[in-house]
Amino acid sequence: MSVQIIYDAPAHLTLPERFLLYSLIYGLRPASALEIGTAQGGAAMIMCAALDAVGSGRLVCVDPAPQVTPDHRARLSHRVSFLSAASPEAVAKAHELLGSPFDFVFVDGDHTYSGVLRDIEAVSLFLHEGSYVLFHDVHYFEVQDAIDEARKYLPFIDCGLLSLDATKTEYLHLGKPVVWGGLRLLRFAPASQRGAERDNHILSRPAEPDTSITRNREHSNGLSVSQSRKMIRSRGKSMLRRLRGLWSGSRRERESSAVEYSRPSFLPDRDRLTQWAGEVGEDWKGYSRVASAYYESAEQWIEQAWSQTVWPFIQECDFSCVVDLAAGHGRNTRKLLELAKQLYLVDINEDNIRFCRQRFATEKKITYIQNDGFTLNGVPSGEVSLVYCFDAMGHFDSDVIRSYLHDFSRVLKPGGYGFCHHSNYDRNPGGDIHDNPGWRNFMSQNLFHHYCAKEGLEVVKSQIIDWDTPKQDCVTLFRKPR
Ligand SMILES: C[S@@+](CC[C@H](N)C(=O)[O-])C[C@H]1O[C@@H](n2cnc3c(N)ncnc32)[C@H](O)[C@@H]1O
Image (cartoon, rainbow, N blue to C red; front, side):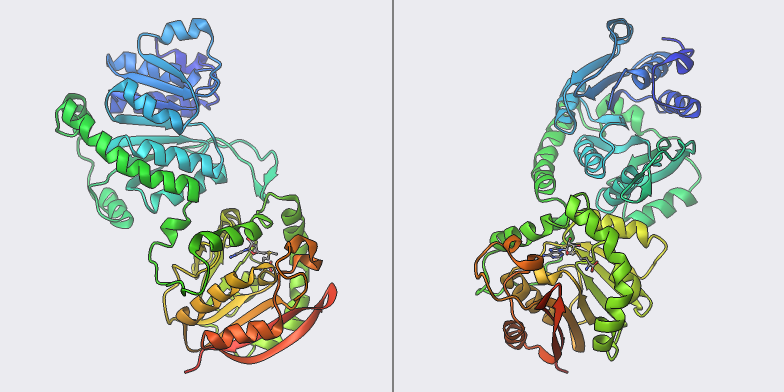
């Protein structure tokens, strides 16, 4: 395959991207390469041509429905194998076919946030020190966010954006422009230290010839091929176990790994709390019809809600360290940021966290936590001056509320305040919240005060308010005694 293919290949890549892809393969000389997202095989043809120029190397292409013509397949067959299967499941199979860790991976498959994250996690099982992972369409915010997220817990050095070309804005998704194109390169570096140190290190050191790929070709990380396979298999197994947890339970587990909360024995077990919190959380995922309509219209009411209900309650509070629990799309966060020095933005739903990350992209005061739905794990103990929860707790199950109150008393500093807008609807006990007005869950002003007392929190003031239905809601300000 000749270099002319750069111009002719049926690839969704701009010309600079085609040249870059060819050059990277030619320069890095991967013995084993993987492509996720084959489509018509255009990028595979470019990679194959570069490997031909090097004179060695194999490529496996993964796609649930590749559209490569028989003629193109034949032209690639000396170097390329196609797997008609979906990533991430097919990644292990690709590794098996290649018989060694991937030296180079090109990710251009499922461009959703969770899809990209799954791909990164899956390929990370089969990389070695110095492997490269190249991503296409990094101008699309979901791809970009997933890479940024993965870098927090996987040992990658960010080699940055290699190609700037982007498509014109065609439409919006989650309020963000949908723009495609762009290449970004990561280098796998588990032996290095933490992210920032790794990046400083790579930036401050003059480039050295990289021998890792050649070494890998011969011995795979300095081990014999069979030792290497054994190592990958055993490392793969333990990582796979961890990743299974991540894929099913999402990244909540990881984010709450610094478990400071201890569940009181009188509360139901974690599985039940997770289930109850999850059922309510489900209603407020950004993509659902109800939720998107809510987020779109709620913003306009926040000034009125603050001037009439919120501010008179919280004006005496200390705003040095604030938790905005169940932040949604951040309309309260925007108000709280005017006052807070530091803010923890907590929500059960990943897409709300993502939305707020974008909304407050330039804001340095915020720490984002996608939580488990019933604790403030990740928020340090005894540092918070105000826990704030507006227009969300009214839907929470009473045990979830009790669990949160228990954890509020952990995170609050002595004298710290809590402000909660909660339900005062105490009919339909044990019923489905969707049968209740405004989807209010079973709670009352008195029960909330009772729970506060049990968790050692003093009620400062409390007011029943009308919200669609008269007396359906209540706002309560409480304090952790000094
Ligand atoms: C009606 S929205 C309100 C959002 C925001 N407080 C506002 O006023 O715009 C409810 C929010 O609660 C979040 N949520 C639901 N259950 C939760 C739970 N158990 N823990 C944390 N957040 C939760 C949802 O993801 C959603 O962001």
